[in-house]
Length: 122
Image (tube, rainbow, N blue to C red; front, side, top):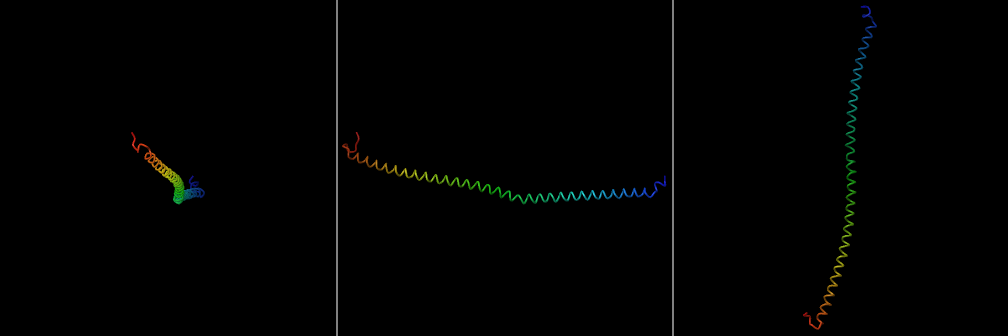
């Protein structure tokens, strides 16, 4: 059996197995390193894209709020115009009523002064 263990083919088979094993470990380590590198680059790219899109999202949010505020301002402007028109109409009615009160007071004074009792009530 000593001749079998010392044969040339036995040493080749053993040496070949060891070299292939070392290559597999190096290949596995290289693949793992590449995977870690790719994950790191992917994470960095995702973070960069997320940071780049954040201002766009904020801008869209601000545009929406600006539109809402413009609508509120326009609604308040219309309400103010209605309030001014109402107040103007009420002021006009008050002026008319004051004029009518003045006329009625003058007429009352005239009737009282021309009544037979001289303005005194008994």
